[in-house]
Image 1 (spheres, rainbow, N blue to C red):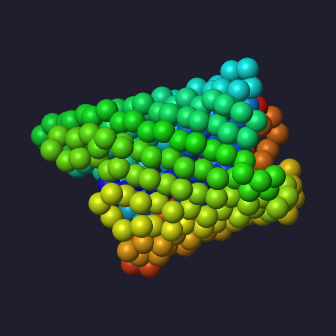
Image 2 (cartoon, rainbow, N blue to C red):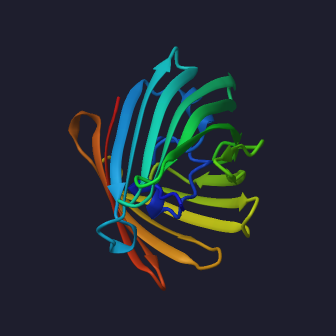
Length: 249
């Protein structure tokens, strides 16, 4: 099944690998090496407004000595007839002032209640570099060995991304994603903070077999709590609403 991003990531078209902040969760394991202390993200989406099909995700992380961090990532995507879950442990470390490296190890599971379930290990690596003061570059590869879940190989996914942060108010993101079995997908998004400490406006688009556009808002409350909502539009299947609550310190 196609994975669905959390609300903040969905709103910027899923272009998250080069992000240097954790506002959209931990898409790149290497980001855990950049010094944030602790946090968690939890949210859900209703794909194309189909009430019987739901997704949910949870991420929690803790930082060590400002140069490394560990996270737990849990996702669910499914219906009453078929469901997929993924459990991952993520680790990231800063290797130099401008370069971080990360990896994840996990378990993918698919289940059909009337028949049986199957599981398979997953593995990925990621890197994040501050190439220029305002330009970041990120890359990740998931399942490079392509393990099999029952008789079906899990997708090998390569993502290469760049982020340009002009200031604390505005940033642009672009990304190329290649699934070994599917055409290249290009993603792009922007974040604008008209009220730098409170409100975030996001918009994005992703191309592929069908182009999809997205829009979202984020609200930062007191005590490190934030709320994000987003909606992605598919020209044939309709709208996917999503929401997320996060806490960071």
